Length: 65
Image (cartoon, rainbow, N blue to C red):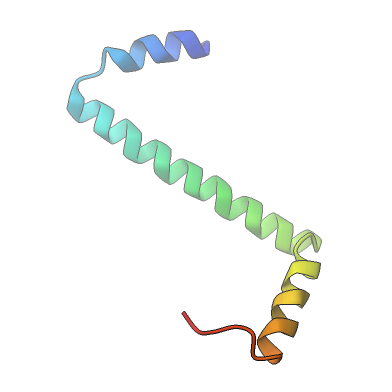
């Protein structure tokens, strides 16, 4: 199914179904983000950033949220 076909189908949805689709899509995107972060952590792509955060925290440059 093409994007145009999906867009056309979406425009024909009743409001209730559109709301359910929007919620599903938001949850799906959040899950994709979580998997990307987990992958980045596992492969070491965030090591430099996390090291910098640790240094700033130890130097008293961070505050609790």
